[in-house]
Length: 498
Image (cartoon, rainbow, N blue to C red; front, side, top):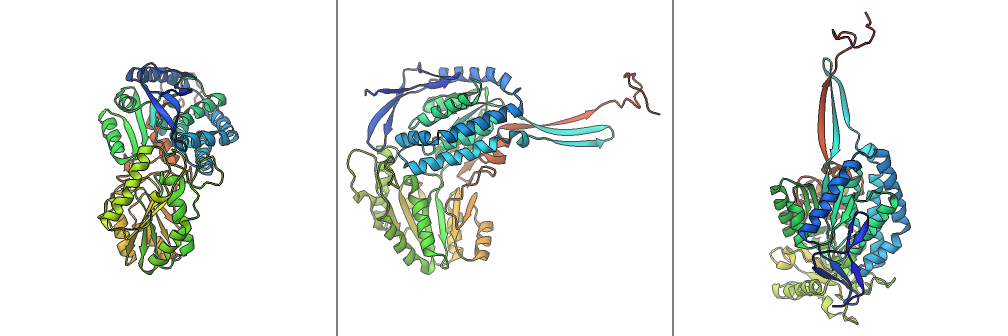
């Protein structure tokens, strides 16, 4: 398939063509047309990138904290100045509307701002006179060469989640972005170079499972950070740790929104629409299940249904569009298949997104709403990752909490209520990593950390923020005793105070 654009790897401060001979096509989801040809790395190409990162680490780890901070301050300004151009790149390859793309860049900016404080973040601790004449201090040091394997749904934000802390902490970083929308990572690499990041500190290596396995088995890579589906997260974690690596692997989600009878129905319906259908539902923090308690179910379903007609689905470049296409034709068809499955399983299809017609060959699907879904249905158990919102009805708070806590995923959850006592109880009782109270998508700010529980996270450390700094550094404790010139029998050349 002939395309005009070619995308290579980012190695030693420049874009270079791949040598494996293996390639992939990058599609425009809004038109269904091929827009670029992407080189896919071999294990040998990955090995060369790691060797470069090892050499670059020697000098980068010696770079002062103030210099690292200066680079990230510059990167922050460049990212902000070029955010609209980056958002356009996101939209062209992912399909999300420009407003969503700009929001993604803004959330990435927060993490860059956090990394600007690296001199403060890496401060150690000191205990004087822990024993007679003995001092103890603790410091954090970089790991060395580390890697990030990132998903298609946030091709700018998630790489920034990883690389900002990793590089600021003194590591060299190898990024393996999704082959579906790789250009954002190349854009970020160029901005970091303009900000003053030395060549070789960041490499972008495109690839598929070949590159992933090369990362997981390479003896010189000390840590791997991953975001993606649960089956792949489990594979990344098990393979990486078996090879002696530190691994954080964020997996899938089935995020619930518990709506109590006293909730503001309009507020809850608006939240369900934005959290369920924003970015076409291709978000790990998207609400996919609304748990309606008691009498709130009927008015809530009616309010959500009434709002579906207002969602304008179209190309991300359309400034009036609120929802764009899905990432690939195959994924669009997979998501659509769940609507028919829901009907067969006994759910009520309130709105069938397959019935909405679109011009052209883009990977579009309308918003769907399913009612009377039950936990035994496949549409409830599976992570659909598309614009399909399910409503599950329960008689009371305890039943709703039980449904949420029994689900294998535990990434994010939200409660909508006017009752402060119920909200406080829920934040304590929900066995989920991130909780929102009248906030449908409780993504933490950059100075906290992001991560779920259960099948949504493999590893012990969450992403970015304080835990991100801990993940990309190793603790070292130093215990020291020095001779006291005033009492030592060794002549140190100091006058003795009697």
